Length: 312
Ligand code: RIB
Image 1 (spheres, helix red, strand yellow):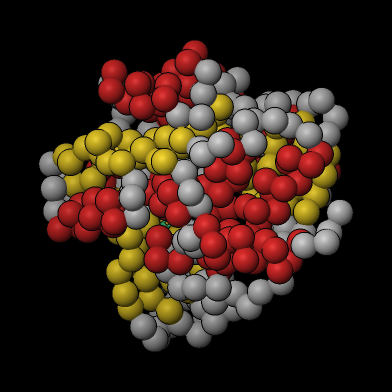
Image 2 (cartoon, rainbow, N blue to C red):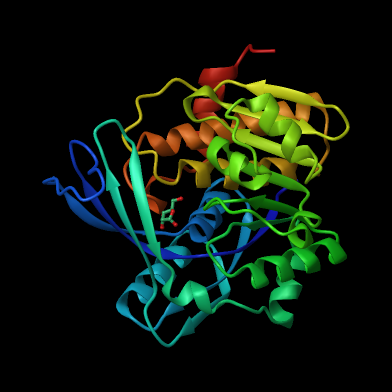
């Protein structure tokens, strides 16, 4: 079954500098290269889903500046349907990103046009209703995120929330989430606990949402749900050059894998979806940049096969 994914979220132009190491607060370090790359967690996840094989619609906002034109062109080039992308007066979203030689990064986002997406319209509702999965993040106003989730729940579309950047979330939104995707830091913030132990984080999050996917970077990912299913998968072993957007590649591929399996939840289906998402995240980390690094389906399949073929 081919998947249809709708994304309501951000698009940013990423201003990326590489350096041998990242600066500490108050410190200046001399960097190496600079480049601009289309990014934003929402747009990245839309491109990730499209490259992973889904029909994908993006609902968001860009500014009426040159960056906005670049962001729109990038989404169209990736095959994403942008009829829900508004152009508003003012600057587009921008992300300042530093990447070091260990592939670690820092990211600071100026939301710009993303901050104007406070309310959705009837066309957006139809887009969400037509999708198998709605993908949400936290780089656009919570009012739009909650409205989208509310409509998805009413119209039978699965709600996948990637709670990034990390934030404590209102019950009103958490009650509408079918699958929560978080890394360890985001998990601790959403759950309001100080532990970094995956079992503790999963237990705490299951009090808030019915299914949790916990991403663990190079250690893979873990899954838990309220029906008692718990499993973990390892990540492919790769040489990472830049982990920017790896979480977006993971989440986009997870949404596609989940939809292609018709939302069926068993040990086999969840294991396969998580492994495929881990392959997408790892493939992304092998290349520099955000949208530029998001892998096509054959690349995901190849790394999946190389890593997990023969595994139980
Ligand atoms: O997840 C990576 C993304 O976070 C970057 O593309 C940047 O724009 C920020 O939104």
